[in-house]
Image 1 (cartoon, rainbow over the protein chains, first blue to last red):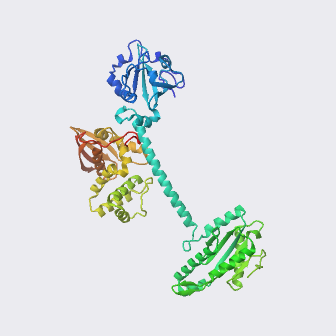
Image 2: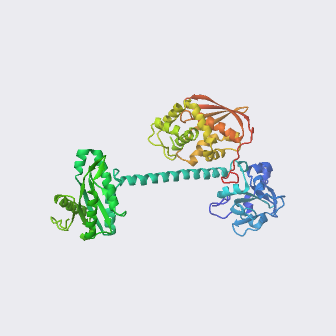
Image 3: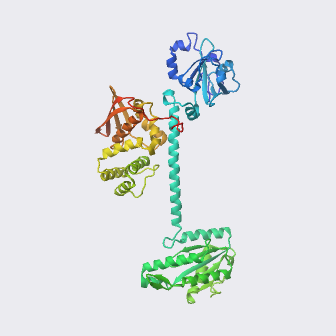
Length: 360
Length: 197
């Protein structure tokens, strides 16, 4: 960015002579500017003599420098001009009149400034106006400045205001995001959970089944239906039915590992996924244990509710390319065979239609 | 209404009168949630219902509840950040008054969808001023009275404030600045995080 009014954008800054008024008079004569007016306009100005010694300074800059006897001090001893490179004296500064300068205090908090130097007529001196640029917060902190230290036209205070306001808004937004994320997780869990039993629901089950198939993990799948549940519902009422379902869910959970997925997918229907277990013997042992556990009477308000369970089993190893729909259909066929054979038993899908053999 | 405004009303009621009152107000106003989200926009009728319910439960005129809300916004420690943002407006109370025209613009800079009413300060001479609030929800002038009262305190100025009614959507507040530097104001460091801030 060129801050040079005498040249077109992108061109080199002008020389000192470009900034001098025509012969009629010098800037101060023409404007009749008092030092008080100058201080108000540019509280961070510095007036340098041709020898590079400070001849005057704005009140804010005097406060920042905080050195006794500021007039007469060597500007180049107090400030390092970082860009453009190589400016070590008045000749160099004069060559870069009108260009953006980057300066740093040599002592103390080594505050950074941006600056603009223009020549003042006649004596070869220069006037420099400084500002903090975007590091205004550090500058204000380091030098304990107040609103009154800035000219009303300076946007430094607005920059500080905006920095603070944006930080607050960002805090509110990240709080909101955190709350929304918690709500999202909660809603997601709810969407995948059967509210009565706390087990997974159909959607939760489908997600896990798809994931197992996608990853190629061997697994067993059981389709389980409670026997005599309808009688409990019909004789003792829905509350008893709900109690039995809840207890059955707890018992299932007690018989399975934590890595297994147990889902309630219909009124008294459950499906079970057992990752890593696809041996027929192990699956049938587990099924037997589950049936035995569910066949123990469930107490409801002093009345024993006697149910049992029928199970259809299939396993990923029985398929060349396991597919969710096919496995569910086969487990269902095996379950139907268990029911047909007198309930309270398991059937392993054999791989042949109409021959769900291997039963208890 | 912007969630920031609704949330301010909620915080005011909860911090000043306790969570039980806030819950009672939320129930009466038939909110179907416990808490306003500061960064969402709500239907204006909800704000109105909350203010009506608050006045009812506190058994106080709505105007005086609104004025207390204004005072709360500046003086409660939970809202120190807001007090700081307001203090950016001016070096003293008079400067602050004269910067009020900028307030909607300043709030826009921070939260682009937050629309505050237009404020216009008229200097009546002899330290008397009239502040005109226009285009805001009815009663906003009373919130401004509370804010100005608390800001005068904050700057250490002594001012008399009076809401003199509204006409065609414009609310008028009379300000009589008795003393610019009546007391030591509260400290304000321009850059947050300065020593003592």
